[in-house]
Image 1 (cartoon, helix red, strand yellow):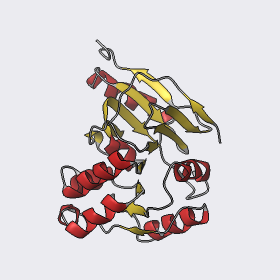
Image 2 (tube, one colour):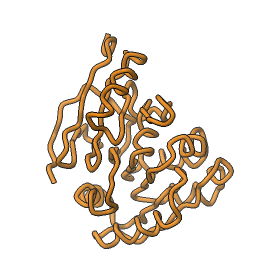
Image 3 (cartoon, helix red, strand yellow):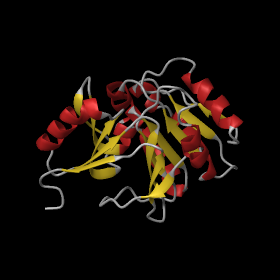
Image 4 (cartoon, helix red, strand yellow):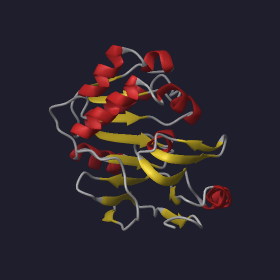
Amino acid sequence: MTRREINLPIEWREGKGWLVLIGGTTYFWRGTEAIDRAAIDAISLDAPIAFVPAANCPPDYGTSFLAAYQRLGAPDGYVVPINDRESAYGAQNAALLREAGLIYFGGGDTTALLASMTDTPALEAVAEAYERGAVVVGMSAGAIGIAEQGLSLGAGVLDGWGWLPHVLVSVHHNAERETSFEAALREHPEHLGLGLPEDAALALGPLGEIESWGDEEIVVKRGAAFDD
């Protein structure tokens, strides 16, 4: 894997952990193994790992995640059963997230993820864990959640949680998505646009690290009013 520092004019939510935005993948878990290894390297092995299936993930996605990460050296963990807003208000689910050293939002239906998690105790628990040092990984839909806004080809531009202010991400980004990406930035000229290809990640560290993980190049586009 190519892991390299990049220079981007962005800020992100303050915390002692890492934020990792993965553009997507086609071959779980082979395509992202190097990214996953880097995420595991950034965590404390004393805390469990957690998978959040709130993007209407397939039933075996969480168990597949746990098996893949444990094979790569991660500690034991669990699937946090959040599939709607009611479960995102559950005290036990919030406690599981708060205790985790790595929290992984699986890809899938971005609108379902946002509808379930936005402005809930579960998301507050994720923020608390991150502030203490947890790694938060967003795959595809999860990457849109972490950013201020993201481009979903099915639903257009969606509002994320704003952990990367003035950033609009395009996931599964490729040449065919350039036109939609540029149109989204014309509608939101105050944003910096980041095109995240499959099997590539933007990783943001607690000491101001800005890194690109993976062999694909992240596409950077400035909205017309960005930094005005």
